Image 1 (tube, one colour):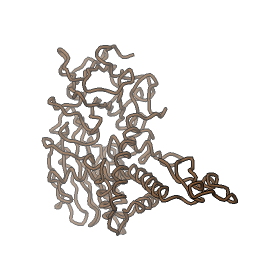
Image 2 (cartoon, helix red, strand yellow; image 1 turned 180 degrees about the vertical axis):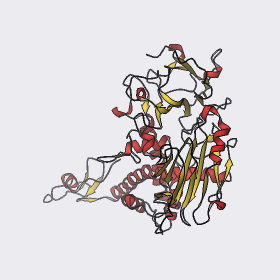
Image 3 (tube, one colour; image 1 turned 45 degrees about the horizontal axis):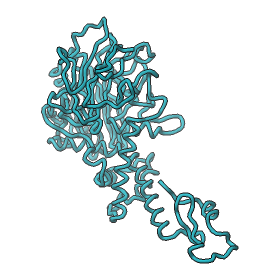
Image 4 (cartoon, one colour; image 1 turned 90 degrees about the horizontal axis):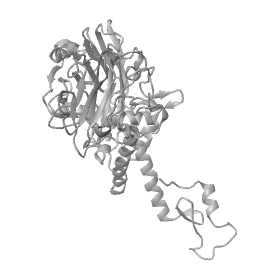
Length: 494
């Protein structure tokens, strides 16, 4: 977008100081960026344009920076919509396409709870077992890992999540983590050993979540939402003025994060300031609405059309790393925060943890993204594709391919009610001595319906390849999957 030219540029475009203008019109000079000035001063039209351009630029930057915060509120709101009240219940689910949420998968059942620290610390009592969990604050900043990637290493233990202003002495026997917000998300998965989903759901029910001052008798009760339609996303707000209204409510409710002070200053210029009403006039409201639309578009470009060289693991494949800053909780680099990597992740997914982005055999899991076929074209719900997966896949636990609608970043929704092919379920009896072919598209392949996912014509889609307990071959490039091949040009993995 255009911006006001610096004083030197303005002077260069203005008439010479000692050369009298022949007329007011002759004294008007246009700067290279299109603003017009009279005797070095902006015209009313230039001032209006500069205001709109400046506010729009600030709003787009603010939108992209604060998107994770609004996205987290979408998760909270989705739980509340189905009766999971803060401080009273928490949700567990074997998820599928009916649960709308950014790149949720059906490999493992999920549990999620809002940890409200407004009345003091909350306890998460985790039994020993195959759990993968974390706590993120309201801004999707990492607070704590739990379970196998956490300090308990799968042996269980009690975690105490304390509010930012907590001055008490924690009791002994707890692993203590301090959050920078009042509302936090607990997200935990139970790995389904042998594909036993009911047993994994029972493992989630065994987790105890309660206020420290009230004890286990006040534990939140679990609610199984596996069969319920849910929307735990920010889709309803992300491209319109409601984005800013939701963000304002969060700013009013939560303490300021010291690391974010410059970004609060940016919000204040847009009318969102803690302790003050958000009352934009029609002019500002118009700018903010357009900024939400364009901010969303820019984030989706970062997600699905990044030009970065570091996005690919294999130069001859379309598969890309989802997380572009290995081992980082908040996309930190030695030179600052990688904002494009941050945009890319939160446009597609939710929550962060250092363990999620590790690239070594000790990682709990890894994620690759494919949005294009072998020829470089975006994946099209109206076409049939095959995917060749060399066997065995280098994972100690299990692996899966899940496909997502490009517009919703949630599992594809068709009458098949299925979006994943998983080694623990549909693919548990495959021959691991030869490559496995999987099928995707609107038409079921003859005799291969159990290795096929239906897609919807007129809808773009992308895939995540996940490996749990990845081994060295997943990182050193000695193993690699094929690309999605259009059916008419299907061929074995190269």
